[in-house]
Length: 295
Image (cartoon, rainbow, N blue to C red):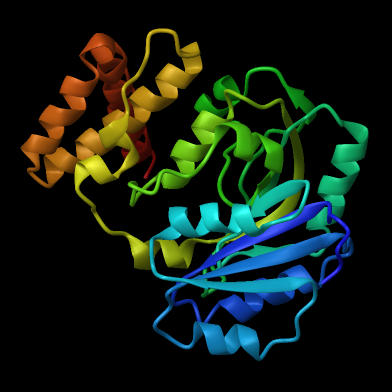
């Protein structure tokens, strides 16, 4: 392993992804820009995942094994082990396009004041029935209010379509290891408080929606992001609306499940902004009615 600090550290939490991890790694090894390291954190896999990666050719790749602690624990551990100036979190069933790191490196040179660089991505499933551009927001440059752009769904941020300066994570951020759902969104929404954001419409990765369908589990409400959310009055206006919208979405699901204790908790935690949750609820209902009428 080269002792010189790489520009990028690509951190991959790995748990029982023997069928997809080789495709993920090969997409990294095909990068046109090669100043990177790969940090794989095997989070106690019980399938053949470890054998698969150990039998692959490795380019600037380190493998760390740890007792299973969940994806947040694995990502935090990966950050501790990483050496790069920028961190890219990639799930073990998603794929980078070959120009991904080149797009980021050009953006860093042209817009050096940013700490958080966001790109476009494609959705795909294993049947290849989807393969489309996710955003239509056609711009490139610094984003003055990323919460506003995110709220109006002009872009979306997820694991794999952003890089963040490592020192921002070290100084302000870690993944919440108590969360079993939406831990990534919790990290992202908190991160936006501390970073200057750049966005480009260039597509750099493919997000595997097949794995989402396979991994949908309903944890206890206090183990998902909505359950710990307490919307503050001094939050950014659109940050509050993003959080209220998310709480409203989870309320729908919990009511459907007849989980009324969870419903009570979600409302009690946010009584001070109940008007925003009611507004978001009506907005969601209206959106679904419009979608239903179109179909």
